[in-house]
Image (cartoon, rainbow, N blue to C red; front, side):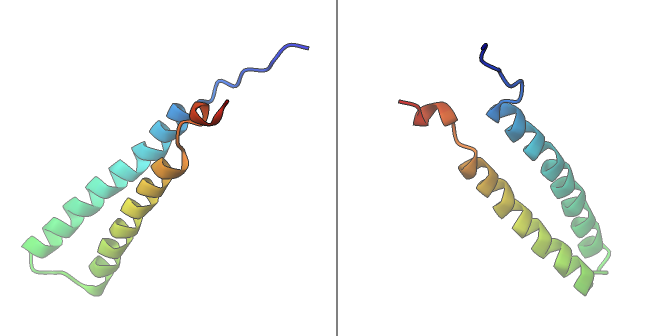
Length: 74
């Protein structure tokens, strides 16, 4: 029986897992900047800033968890 090779690589998962958070972070930063500039910063913007911080922790965790699996093979 032939070995099955998966087309999904760790690098592909990292790339996909990083694309959407980068877009979300840029949009959130622009929104927060505009709300601060117009002096219209509300509690909902505070929650947006909090979610941005949590997003950064998520992305860091993604890269820590998805290390190079070939390093574990003996």
